Image (cartoon, rainbow, N blue to C red; front, side, top):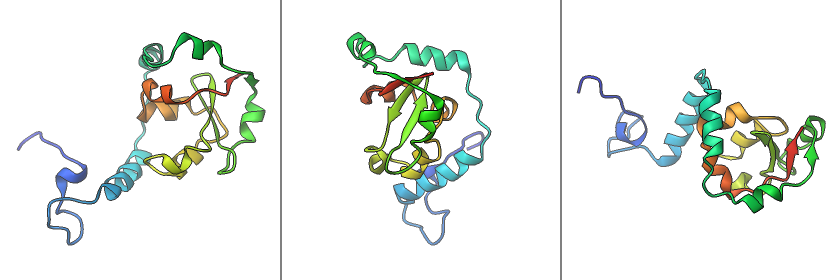
Length: 140
């Protein structure tokens, strides 16, 4: 069909000897990550801010309970599997316990650990996804 593009499991049968209707979901994630890493993705700052303001799940009390100020120097010390902090949208999150649960694998988070990864995060996630996590600090 002219103008129709497809990716992932929809194109099953094109990879290796797989002729039975699709690739495994894990293969789709791996290939998707490889392609995603090769694309120059620009984040529209106005859209990112708008998405941040629309965080439906966070309560005002949770916002007010945000702890201490975290410096960039302190954040940089937490870039390992033992202690994995990430700065996103002016807040610091401890993703150490989440590493093994991340659908794209721990490596995806470890690549951005210890730094402000706002642009990288919003290139592939929405602000609403952060409502499952309580920030441990404010990045300053």
